[in-house]
Image 1 (cartoon, rainbow, N blue to C red):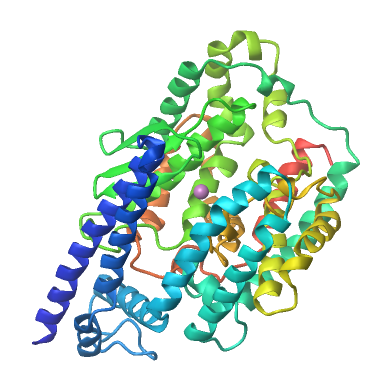
Image 2: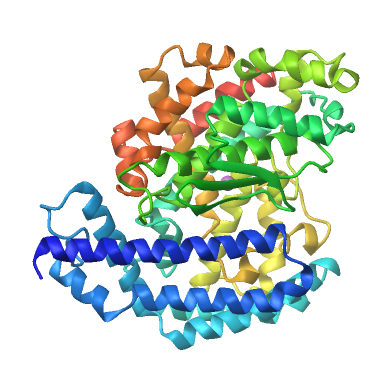
Length: 507
Ligand code: CO
């Protein structure tokens, strides 16, 4: 076959693979939203079947032959330089996944599936009874299998490298350690200054707020952000998430029965940020291909956090929206000034639980997990010593110590599912978002006026042009370089926090 026929064949295989992925996403959506509890067993069989089909597709001999013919190699993973950027992006993604999936023996994948399927109920039980020992042996097996996996995948510096690379391609342990260590020092110092100040009042967020009105308000903001309700929906679920079920079918969820009204509102905006990226990535050229989606978890998270924190938790944003929110909820907010409201939604307080953490302390929760995961994977830390190590790091970074393992080491589901290497992407998203903001300030100097006049679509258009519509064509590092002209620099995030919280807390 000639090169034209080869790339056409790769695109054909890709299109079919995306359809299978969409079907799998639909099964997952249905499981979260509609399925009766008794459906779990049948659904996990269906899911396993789909995972198998997808695995066979990506590791087939035909893919290997095509990649060879297209000139892909370790030195040149995007194939022959004469292909278009889109084609090179596609070759790069297939080369990466083909090699990765071929390196892990099927037996190891199956063993991990068995171990995690038992580990998850054990984790639920352990958390409920606040007893780490119930989960310990399961986690020991997961760590052992994870270490075996890293040996199969191979690495140059750190056994954690292939794990982080799975979720954030191109990122290394030493690079994460570099950016995290800078930001950790700055955040701990900022927290110290905040602790010396009087705490802000946010009690008005904890009053009852009507769900229907919250939903109306969330939809109004999503619409202003550019969320296209012709191509997407918003509904409720236990844990907010975003999923793409087809090329013009992007779904997000939120939850309203939370203790704090702000956690519902900002969940909606957060998932809205993910959805805008997905909607923009489905440009005519990329729609229905593997590249018609966000490039990486960190860049994705940078977009959700950009909208949630940088835009919607700013004073500028509420200059436009506060009067209408107050009008909807006169009993709860009638006597609360805009200034007091903005302070309330930005309250900083060290706490035990990552998912409830504020913008300042959130990254410390992630850095803690990164330090623990790297130590577990390279053998410096044993699972049995984990609760103690966790509590010590909480004390060191946040100045608080969990009263039990449920609000400590057992709080997150990730490890029981075998997800090691995933956590860093959350905090990397914060770092990316602050660096994008620096460029936005230069390119749209009056961006704050756009926010304060409710002209959010202006920001959406900029993000669309710079980030969304590129989809998965360029790597995360390339996108960052193209947009900001620089590699990842954590000082942007530190400065952003410093400036914002100096205002909020009169530091
Ligand atoms: Co997110």
